[in-house]
Length: 193
Image (cartoon, rainbow, N blue to C red; front, side, top):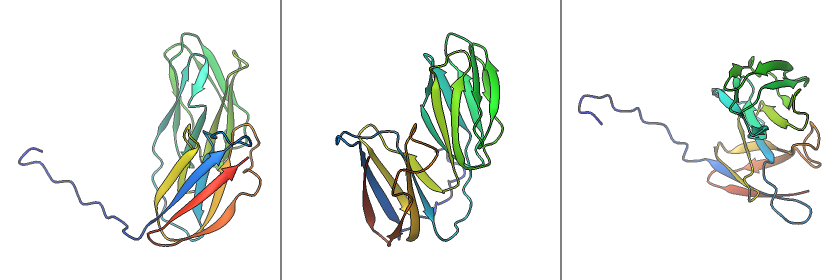
């Protein structure tokens, strides 16, 4: 740090926070990656900023295949492939259609409404991706081991939802479900298809 540079402001830490650890598996017991998990507090929380995100096109597929974003987010699609793509969605949450030449990018209108946005390519019919738009302040995807940890959650009652690409626009059977988080605790949730 430079001698005359301003010092960064201290970030308040919620010492009485809670966490949710999710372990997701398929019916055969193998890990379920890319399952979208969200935690929506029953009591309202202050709105969080929705950062801009990028959906890449590489080797004729969307990267990531499942992109989770908060409502109010701006998504830019970048064509990093060696061919032209006509990317579209007819989904209620955000219909769009954009032509992307090689190396081009396009910023889509803000995703203001929660829902599943199925994304395809008019040129390459086997290209399929998903943008999951959520109004929940806490969310993420399970990794390749089927694991996700949502940490730093204020104590209280939550609605926990789980969604998987390709099943439907609705949560998995049995979700959302209610759960109570207490200070300095971690709830473990096992999800099995």
